[in-house]
Amino acid sequence: MPIQKPKGTEDFYPEDEAVKQALFSQFRNVAQSFGFQEVSSPAFENFELLSQKEGEEIKQQIFTLEKRGDENFGLRFDLTIPNTRLFMQKQQELQKPVKWITCDRMWRYERPQKGRLREFYQMNMEIFGSQNPEADAEVITAALTFFQSLELTEKEFEVRLNNRKLLQGLLTELVGEKRLDEIIRLIDKREKMEVKEWEAAVKAAGVKEVIALTKILDMTSLQDLEKIKKNDLAQEGFAELKQVYELLDKNFVRIHLSTARGLAYYTSTVFEFFDKSGKYRALCGGGRYDKLVELFGGQPTPATGYAIGLSTLRLLLEDLGKLPQTKQRLDYYIAPLDKKFLLQALTLASTLRKKSSVDVDLMQRSLGKQMSYAKAIGAENVIVIGDQEIKTKTVKIKNLKTGKETSMKL
Image (cartoon, rainbow, N blue to C red; front, side, top):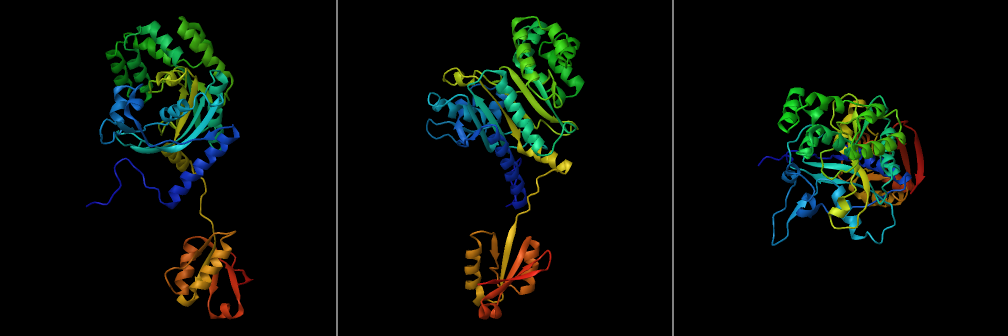
């Protein structure tokens, strides 16, 4: 039987887990500075809930659990839907706006590739209850603050901002309402496809004026967009886009009409963070989903938020040499010279652990091997316990970096 991890998953050895936890910790710190609180929910949800507002592509990617009786469950593929359910269950009690974050794992059954796995971790941020552009700007600014706290700069990543209403309004003027969702999904995939392949796909979806569509999607200034917004939906979307854009740091943010976000529940503002090298897929993505709570049977509630994929972010940080430094600190390694000194070693360890991190040899090795092990695991100090130490009730503490020795009473 081959012993290997399932395809599209990751193992986290101590050094990898330390990086993951460091990134989660930094995200939590930034979120708390903006007044967000952390929540969590089950790994699986009702399949009907997970699939209610999604296209066939996402439905086929949901890992479903073996059906027992009438219950039909699937593993969550994002955190927005579970968090929306959490909000709905206490909707009347919660003070608005509700500001939540989550750091957890998700699953999607799709072809694994670099930065895209079948089991993956995300950091999520949501605001429920505010329809104002300030809420969109706040979640984007919080994400920007997190990325900057990792020493990422405007030379290394950018924020691409769009509005689904504006995009839908402009597309309606160009191609009508037929197959609009299909065309938007293709627009979202534009930069992932070859030019000719993409043009053929949008033609097949009913777009006759591909050149005109391309010109619209390539517009990046509010001035140009203001000239072409004609119908009410496009005008409304333009006004929202302008309001959000004006609240953000222009050093990082640019208008990008090809940013559509593939998930069907987005209603207005949409955005994505990308590395400027073009080497990786989206580092962060989100937007506004004002109809999701109502769709699931709750009171109409505006909402906005995003998700950051751990895997892609970690790859970028590693590539740039900016991964968090996470070497585990071990203050003391206690080396008993014989099995008969183990009890004294454990007693001393128990005392020291009230304020420090301590490891004790459990394998009855020679002092030489214990010293080698202590150095290998990064211990700062070694304490040897033998006959002399027991007689004098004093141990010597050797600092492995400086070689300096100090004494301590047992």
